[in-house]
Length: 304
Image (cartoon, rainbow, N blue to C red; front, side, top):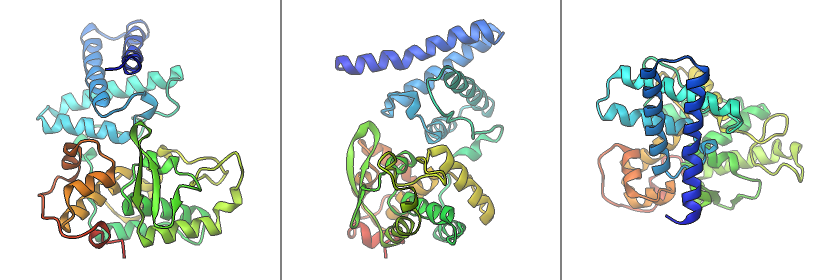
């Protein structure tokens, strides 16, 4: 580990020590509860660090879902998983009050039925149903449809969608900066490109300024954040009558799974998702491997 990495790690885990001081002095908790909270938060911090998260500001709801899912896969009791979620909610609430993070990634995660938090895969019909929910006669609807098309059509992380600029898309490719500011070039399907072009030509120009170059902006012209996208996708899913637990991660997860089911090679999917380790891709898909057939655009059901 280089000196810079060591410094980052020290800062990352120092927040946990500050949290300990807080819960000891202000929460009035029993020693057993404090010990449990610290163990839960420490376990999550170790998990997040392994996932290349270096700042708590970069923690997304998907990280929490994946962590809780790993506990469930390891046969932890539901009561233990429930307590872990409570611990993380208290921790991230503390970080927000301290100004360490701007938004609380645990805010939208609710107990008690935690197994429902594990990401589901949408089938093609459900994807189409979700895509058709935004009212494309409105600026918000056109924008939201474009966001959903990119999440599913190119498998982007919601944080990557939020950091796209008006210059990120070139012809049929997207220049994406993923975890650790690593750049990758991702293909964009015709439907997603059409949705983005419609958004750019009809509405995005209304908020054109040198100060705000984000591709996706709010109706007030400010850059979209991941919590706003999380909320909107849950609202549209409810509107569509989709009962599965859904998040921006669900569309990325479905992207990878549908590619694999249609014969795409796991290594190709790894590159498209921006995974440094093939094991991350294998965990994402949760389906049996199949043989390599042809290139990405042939396999993806929304490419044509």
